[in-house]
Length: 123
Image (cartoon, rainbow, N blue to C red; front, side, top):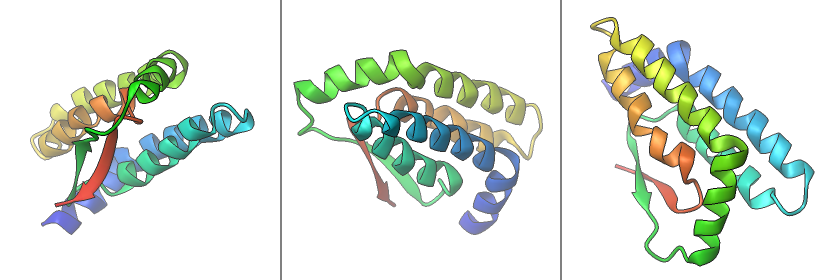
């Protein structure tokens, strides 16, 4: 079931959101200071392609630098990606088949806003 959901996800929402994360990662890797944001964006792009079977976990050891970085990320790219997840989640929830995919989109909003304070783990 997980593989079926991942394939449907890839076609309906995952590919487009992953492209958004890759573009944000490329833009962030242009400057040396924002390379950690770019790497986090590439990591989330991988998660956006195949989310079922993995979950997001908060990093307790993330410090003040992570919080400052997350604030910068929200201003630069995070809110655009969060809006993308919300819009595609609402669009997917219109159909009965898309409801689990819409819920998965809504679950990805926090990691799109604070990528440095979270990690992706297998379930």
